[in-house]
Length: 522
View 1 (cartoon, rainbow, N blue to C red):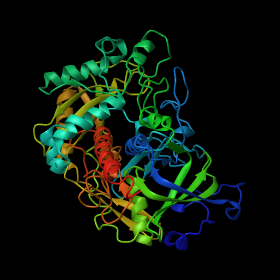
View 2 (view 1 turned 90 degrees about the horizontal axis):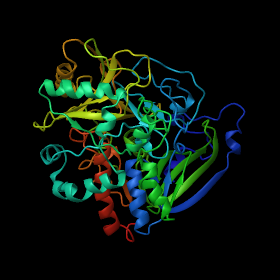
View 3 (view 1 turned 30 degrees about the horizontal axis):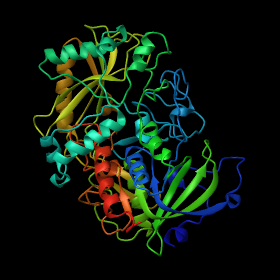
View 4 (view 1 turned 60 degrees about the horizontal axis):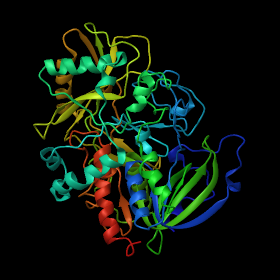
């Protein structure tokens, strides 16, 4: 077995993932090793993994989901998620300690927290951990691209008409998307949203409410004092404690588990994937505690393996498998066609308007500029967490960019590292800057945090359709191996934040996989 010959199952947690046996833990030789067999294993529980789990379970196929993080249950007045203004160990994944916007670093104890910074050369990737993946901490903007912009960036064989009629609406229904009610927008803490909309219209830019996977009645109840603030004071950057946010854990995954044919194994960190001699798939897993101590090492065998670990981790696992012989003959395009979705994050300080404090969130309005498919972009206003009144709020832009990076496997680190050209997003970044300058007005100070610390919350590509996979996510030349997350995207998602398109492409893929592969491939 290629993976076992390279890395014994008695070794401590993989150095590439930063897991080590901590002082006082059992020695590596005493960590038990177990084996399991499954029909389908899904690595990751975000949008791609959640869609996969539900649709396979509904089709009668038992599916086992591996999630490296923990569950984050919410409810009125819960304290599940950390607060941005009082950060603690729950923010960070096992000592990742990301420098958020390059401004602050925290020496907290190791914990299987929400957020991991994956460092690259020229660009860092911010990725989530926990049941629900990125949906736990994303702002929630649920946007569908137009046909013209979609076809300019995705293969036309995906058939936008069917995506528009079937798959985008299916995702919208599952996430129960809605726009914020006027009653909420008129309330005192949403002054920044109102100023954004006024300024954007005055500058000649379009403005519309952004569909969100949120039950806005929770925010209205906060205004009435039924719950302590979470939405209405912007205290939702690292998760909404009060609930009402229709993240993947409480939609797709909850429905999948309710079928009785889906199991979700938390604190299961995948270290390697490989092809078994009989053509099935081997998944090497460390079962850990919340401090990262390896409690058990598992070797799972599956007829089908779905990679949905997020763009960075899916790409890294596959590249390691290819470089070390765990999976032979992976497509040459693996690790290429990676894009940042053109992310640009600004602070906007106004000398003319008082945004007030606190600021309601997460997102109310956005401005689309989608007429030119080659430079289509979106700008939104997002709240700051509850801070003293700094006359400052956040503006975020993203859009179509032809700039691409690639991963390179480093054998010394046993890891694949992103290589990103510094000017790759220059064209769309300039256009977003111009629009933000228009919206901010003359009496404004704008700071592009992305230029200070290049990073993206919307990583896309690495195992792209048409290069590494077919349009259904099947890895070319490898029966039973699939990619169904952001790594499958062709470097951008057509001027939209990625969540809705990743989920819609996965919905389309699962229709085909259930019809064509279930019962034959697995």
